[in-house]
Length: 288
Figure 1 (tube, rainbow, N blue to C red):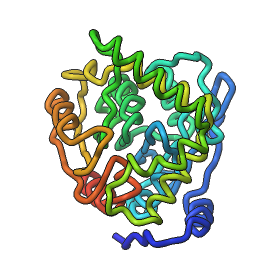
Figure 2: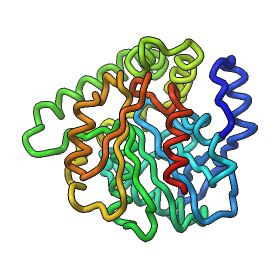
Figure 3: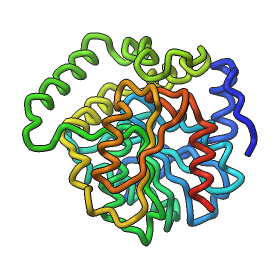
Figure 4: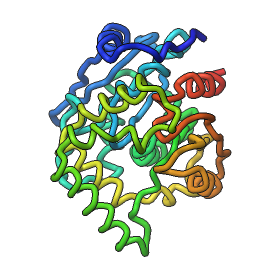
């Protein structure tokens, strides 16, 4: 695989993604659209499908996608309400609402089978669809620093605290304010400024309404509902310096899901940006 060059100016990275991982819009049957970035063999009916976290977007997968593009079709979405993707109709959406849009998108894109990768909140979007689609369509499910959600019984107080805290921060700071300091929580202390800039840029492209819907997904979901029900191979990966979904928490989720837990060296929560070479190498091994 080709080496990843991380020390690029932000302007160069923005120019590069539009040229090498271009965006196109997929129309949904009931109206609306989903923005996808794509590289590799666009005619293939097999793809690596990558779903970003709550404070990110499709562009966060750029370095992973471009390394693997010679080997597989690479697809990364801006989730509903992010980028140019239409928000969901329900103000308080469930995982099934995101799963429906994912199903409709992949049908329109001609994807019959995939390796499904969900980062952080993306795990709560990927898993409901994986449960529906089954092993015949999902070759494997990779959950990177998965969010477990706050929808399990007995979590009402914590759920309310998280919802209130996140929505209050959005109201007080706005998207730009959230983006200005987001790297402090999402990357390891040793992360270079180029990585931090890319993390902040991805957050800065969020829309308040889409983020608010994603907060409701986080608060209302329970990853534990998938325990014992996933028919495809599952892996859980986590950065060794992850402060958001710490390694111990991810190890617990891995145990509940019957999956191995892999530690990603020298990485915080935003491992797909901070350590894309590790992510790409491990995904490549699952493509063999």
